[in-house]
Amino acid sequence: MITDTIIAKIAEEIIRVRGIIRPEDIDLKAIAKTLHAEVEELPLSGCEARIIGNENKATISININSRHERKRFSLGHELGHWQLHKGVLFSCSDEEIGKFSGNKDHREREADVFSANLLMPDFLFEPLAMSLNHVDFKSILELAQKFRASFLATAIRVIDSNVIPAMIVCHDRNKRIWFNRSRDIPNRWFPQETLDEYSFAYDILYKGEDKDERQQAVSASSWFDCEGAENYEVLEQSKPHGDGVVITLLEFNDEEMLSDFYEKPLDVYKLRW
Image (tube, one colour):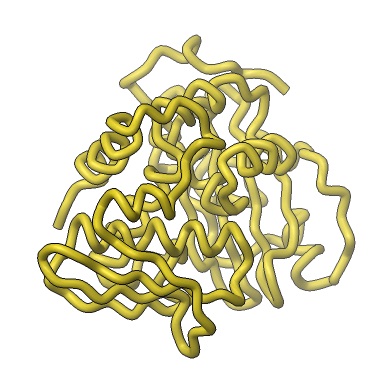
């Protein structure tokens, strides 16, 4: 297995050596050509993308019926296989590209990490992420548009950038599907398996309510069942994410919630409401 740090460096170097200095100049089809990979868009059944290649040349097929952002992530994903997993034939389904559950093959996850870093390399992404006042839908969507990436892929990159302590959580009607948190959020803040009835996400998922999508303060006990959670608040913003699924951004703005983390002083954060 390859570490995320190494994968990020490989992807970023591909962007740097080509002299790309603006997000809008990241042309994945042109990059693929320089990596000896031809790209074709075809109607695909049963998969989002596939790659066939030998040691020297590859052909990548992308589902022509997918939306633009999906095509770009899929192409980045297959380029990840081409750079990291040569010699293996991959036919990647919708469930294997850009899905953030921890249950899939490690090579598919590695290709996702590569794609995210190819589309949004740190040296271009982090300065823009640092300018954010909040981790909210509006700011993430604006970043996504700059990089021509999906909302979800961009949200994960913002969380991973660790510029503001925040968490993204995805639930269906039965359970928590996956979550991701900034590395400076203490481990004790682990989101509950099922949605609490006092969360805004619960009203969206189970009552079908069209909630105001602005960030709103909610008791931390609506999301976490650890001791003392009722003494704190987090900012919640939730919205539907497909049929029977809700996605939530949680922003941590209480210094005491972060106080048992030792690696960084609290004043590095832009802690604000």
